[in-house]
Length: 475
Figure 1 (cartoon, helix red, strand yellow):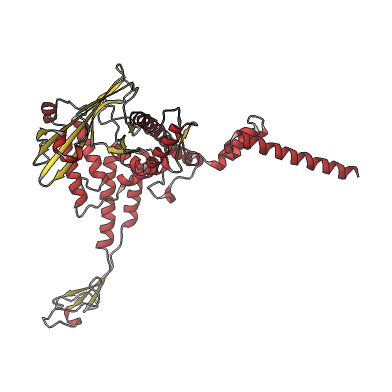
Figure 2 (tube, helix red, strand yellow):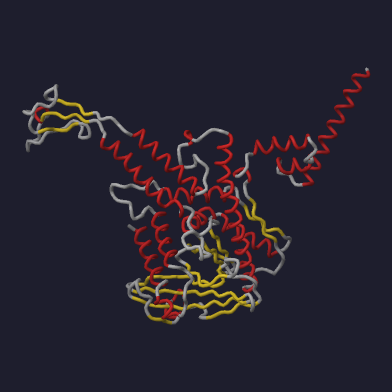
């Protein structure tokens, strides 16, 4: 119930702030269509197993969370962010972004589920903390030609007693003026369906130190990183916002939940049972039959109608139809995998995946392409986040300014067949299409200096071996 209460609360904020009330009271018109608002609500419900089609009879397979989580895992496994640069600022940023990387898999999962995620840093003493703001908790206002969010409203709502306090943090980036203007407005209401009336920031203690308006100059980008799930928006093609990683598989996911529930019911309803005359059992003081196993035995009040050929007992062992249901379910799971850019066997039965070489390569290529695009999106977000961190570090004099270069590194084995790649490289070395230096750097993960040293050692050992062989033969 707690999770559902939180979901309903967030929905209340979102519906309130995308209505005409926001425009009339606050003077801000958000850039999100009703189609996107409805879709976001659906994706959020599906992620927490609260889809509209789920009932006591129709159970969830938890596919939305599985899809979003699997993609996040494939992207962030063995991922690292290295800040290159021999400066105190580079070292400081490294210490701050390391805290982000530890949370990244979970946060990217949320972004995959809802289509997007904003990472917004803010100073906290001598540290820089990061707010991970999920889609539905930020409201885009404007975009540039490259689909970057240039103006956005962040929503912070807190409860004190029976009163609801809402803070709207409005960021506006001007590329022309090279400024970011941050406006904070606070509102008080007795319910979540209405933003209420405006109050001063000092009236609510947690916000009392915030400035109503602040302008940051000499900046070249917004002060946050935006992760957008890298798939075309087919809900609202005119919107630069991202869509859920399972947006195109909503219908298939509903079908899978229904078939899965049928399979569960098949086993529940097909349990073996023994029907017996009530006279076959001992009785309680009230005259009720005492069943040895309530799951197995069924008591019949009157046997005069003759219970089968055995008279007192009749065994019920129905024939299961699970094979056809499982086959149909697996076919739907493969449809989901195809639609979500996953290789067959990721959530479907890997034993039923076609085995021809061409089919295997084609299937894996879908995952490879999806992960590559996601890595680009994650890298863009991290670079944007680090720029914002750098600006805040300068403004708050947290460390001396200095140059830095962010580098995001990923585990290549996720999107490549390491053994196949190594064999191919060996053939290219033999054909003199690839140098031994390149081979060692790629396959042994050595830097150039180490690879050169290893090759020299190998050449020396080979030369010494040849010399000993020649000497032996000469003798």
